Length: 578
Image (cartoon, rainbow, N blue to C red; front, top):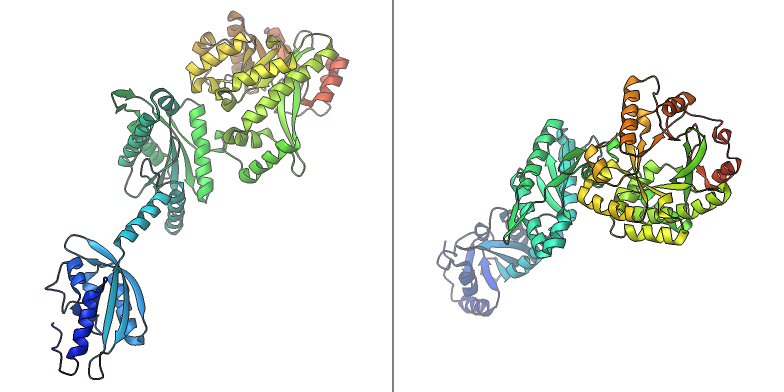
């Protein structure tokens, strides 16, 4: 529909307006009250590319469907209320869409002319592109272009809302590459970055469009899996994720193998908020890496996840270090035939002013996760060695001190320096220091373990395998590693001598140790029958409530002065635990 021809009374004003509109740097339209274009400036025609078709066209028809309602509402409001209106909308061209800021005003050129709308538009495409880039940068990982932690949390909250409506659960899977540090250290960060990019691409390909994949830092990715919550579903998806990363990466003439481990948490079974779901998936991932890598583990309390109040407890831990709230307790290790104390195992305790004694099962996993275990472990090692000198002054004979080394401590590059510092500061000979390490810790990276254990042996420190029989129990590593002591877990002691299965296991361990010239400490000994059975089978050392609970240093010193077996008989023996 063409605009009506001007009359003699309004031709001059219209010509003047047209001249002004053509001179404007912005695009300009005249519309009737229905939103049809009566006039379009030359710049509008050039930008939109429809010069001969614009007149008579509804302006809103030039916008994509998503933007049409806002533009139609702006036109209606301007004509009805005769107030300026501003709206942002896209207008289509044959090749693209252009963002405009459109300012609408109603006007009458003369008393005899019909009311019209004047629309002035400014091209905002470049600004919108910049804003979109900034939004993308704020919500996506720069290396892989995947969503980052910020967008991930938003996506999890959206899936939680959907799950509440549908009644269906979902899962969160944290994927950590195995051995990625070696790639960066050995081949350089550019190669490492290429591995991360390719890993992200592979993971994305095996997921559904409805799934979210994010990179949350380092070598970790997180997949949010709506509707995936059964054991069979999770096994299927995690199997695909593991399989796609097992194939070698071919980068710059390098063939690289990394593999992956996965930790899974489930909504609402494990948690009902995004932060907790992520924390529990991380805990399960740590467990997967500690127990051999290359596997997927679904979170459970047995997997060693953070406690319910881990955030507040973590903050309290930093305060506890400053205030000196952490303590060392000592549990006697006794020679079975003579009932004489040979040494002590050092156990960490936390005496919180408000919570009382915080169980190690609550704070040790948190310290292991946030790295505080390195600080606490270094302090415990040095303090235990210093305390050993005091024990020996009272006992008037050599003793030994046994200290637990956590997985994160063992993998820390500074661990050997910490060990050297403790030995030098205390003056304790290395052979009087027993370092207890779990089987799982050694098997995370056997090659690294062999190197570190060898250097520990060079310092004369003895190596004990803690909780022997509950992990890998591989004869290969007993031969390969410089191990001196096996500590039989209390799970195989508590039902002796009645349990023939436990008796068989203990007998086998004792025979094995004898042939390999290893010492054995039986943990969790609580009754005279247990002690007698172990003594008859040649177990030389015992540890447990029968011969002494974990005790503060001053109590242990008093017991050493007595040097009597009865001194270690607690008045309130309890079944279970040490």
